[in-house]
Image (cartoon, rainbow, N blue to C red; front, top):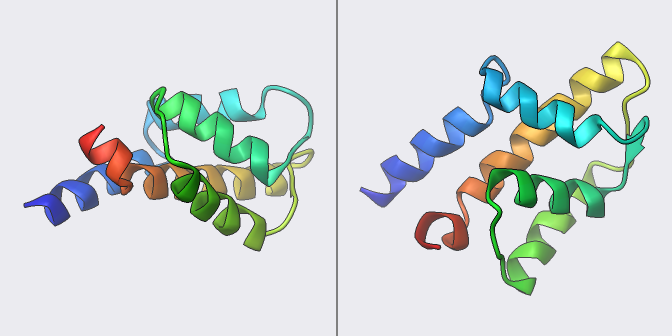
Length: 102
């Protein structure tokens, strides 16, 4: 079913133990010690796809990213938080219509 497929993909793309997900986190973090919520959404969409998403979907992803505030990753604790947020964002993207049926 569609729900099982969405859950399967979301579980895998948010699994921070997987080398591919770790690689995505490193690629998101490679430019400096912080990233804006806007850039987080764009980088995750680019790295999971590339994928074209609607303005409405992007707005929903951005609202989620902004709810959690600024993203710094200068320390190990902050990097762990960035990793969690990237995993969450990848799971949200994987649940979109554009990802599932694009």
